[in-house]
Image (cartoon, rainbow, N blue to C red; front, side, top):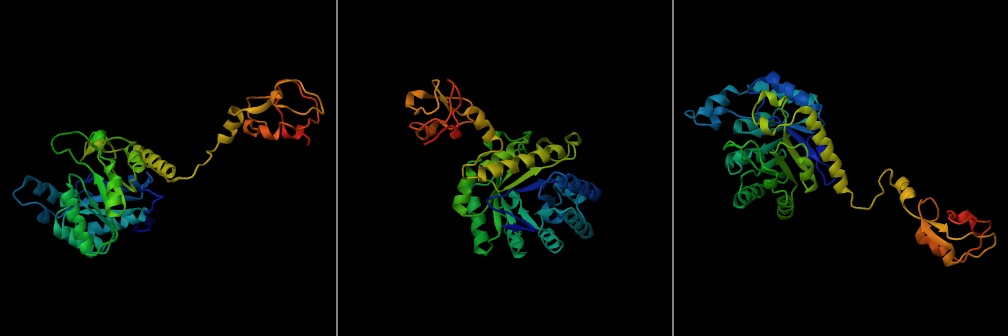
Length: 337
C-alpha cells in the first residue's frame, strides 16, 4: 500500500499524528500542529474535517460547534499545501461528502473513514470514487459491521485500503482506554481474514502503546498529538506532547525493526561479551613442549578469548610446540600436528 510518497510494507511502520480537531477552527493553530508533528518523525498528520450542514441536524447542540470549526475551501487548500511543505502526508477524516470532494482535489494523500461512518454508505462510496488510498476505522464496530463495510468496499472494486483496529470509550466520561481492553490480538485475525494491511488507533495515554501494537502486527499507527495537555483541548487525556510523540515514534520504529528480523543476528557488542563470558580450553596440568594433549590435560574456564570449549576435538591428540603452565588458556598457535 502506498500513501503519497510513503510505502506501507511488512518492514515499515506508517505513523500518523492525529490532530483531533485541536485547532477548533483556527487555521494558524492548525499550522502550529503541523509544525509540531513534522518535528516528531511521523509520516503523516490527520485532520478531522466537517461541514456542519452535512454532519448534524441544526437543532443539535453540536451543530453550532462544528459550524464554528469549519474551514473555507481556500483555507483547506492552504492547509493541504502547508502539510505538503513539511514533507508530511495529509490524512483526512471526512465528516462530509463535500469535504471528500474538496480535499481529493487539493492534495490530500489519503482518507480515514471515521468509525462513526463505517456504516455510512455515501461517505464510503465517495471516498472510493476518489481512487485515493483510505483506512476503515473499526472503533466500536461489531464483526457484522466490519464485514458489511469490507464487502461494500470490495464490491465497489477498491483495493488500496487498510483496516484500523481501535477502541473509543470516552463519551461516557472515561478519561482513557484501559490497556487490557485494546484487543491487540485481533490485529492478526483481521490481517488473516481480509488480507489487507491492519493498523491501530491508540486511545490510551501511553507512550509505549504504539510499540505494543507494532509487535502485535500493526503496520499503521495513529496517535493523538497536543501542543500541551495543559490546554485541555479535544481528547487531551490521551494526547502525547511533541517530545513524547517523538519518543513513541522512535520506540515503535525500533520495535518494528526487531519483529521484522526473522534470522538470528548478533547484536553490536555481543561478540565482545562472548569473549568475556564464554569458556576457553585451558590447561588442567603443567605441560611440556612435545607432550601429546590428553582429555585430562584440559578443562574449560573463562575468559572466552581462546579456543572455544566445543572445539576440544581440535586440541586433544595434538602435540604442544611450547611449554604450558597449569591454568593457561590454550591458543591454536600452541599446537602442532
